[in-house]
Image (cartoon, rainbow, N blue to C red):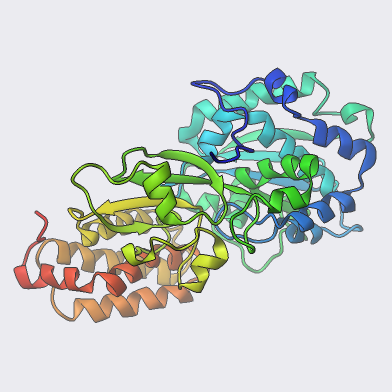
Length: 420
């Protein structure tokens, strides 16, 4: 029913082999690129495709790569990000388990586009099986001539190393990831441009694994084909949507960018569980806002959600039913974010524990009326933090107060959680 591009080689219970990947056109994009295309040709193809980052920020991929200037110093680096510690998000793990060579080929093409010498595949420690899969298949790719010195007989040499994260959420932020690889404290760096001074002060680009996996498809099939896969004019390609919570068929699905939430819920995920009714959903991982059922027909892409005042994030949907305490769900998320803060700036270091304390007291029946405006004020102050971590952490709080304030107030009136 839905065209499968990223999941074309999906097998039951195992990743696709190199032979299976090549049978479907794998590494043809790399072969054509090193023989026929310049780095500028590759970047132009991405521009025509409309490919944007799949890690949450949604920045145009071609533009990021074009920031590495022709006369920039060497060596240059690529960072492939599979840290994926955003609660509700598990698409990159599924992708690596499905078709590791699609990701690997995308990384190599990124290296060619910026004339890089090396890539680091950054992966969370709890994805150890996936790290081992990538390490194994990297060696397979080397033995086949797709990695290492003089790839496919060309003058392009490039290799990839796997780097296991220390296991904190903040390490997945691109500039913090670079710090972590270098063995430094992984807090974000907003006063530098990584395309000028990233890893070891050399030009570096960082992309999400799903973004990189799209690159071979664009080069192989053309930018117009990729853009045409989307449902909306402003979207491009397919997207790996995670869906979890109170649904019949939770999982990771490849669907057209811009597919309405209603279609994902009712047709792809099989609807709500028996006895459950939709109360709210989070559209793009834990750092996006709760959305009530009135948004069921919104198109799930960056621009469509922005138009209704929300963020697309990673496209990881979490579904809540009528028996869910939204305050309790928010407490769960804020507990996570307060723990994962790098502690670098005051709004995040001090503000998130303050928010956590107020919500915990509300949930315990110890809340007071002035907690509500205080929470609203504190959530607003998170926008003054150094990086995007704290504003993302505050998104569920803002959604709770915007759409479910009456439920929060019931905790105060009843002096207990009304759902317990």
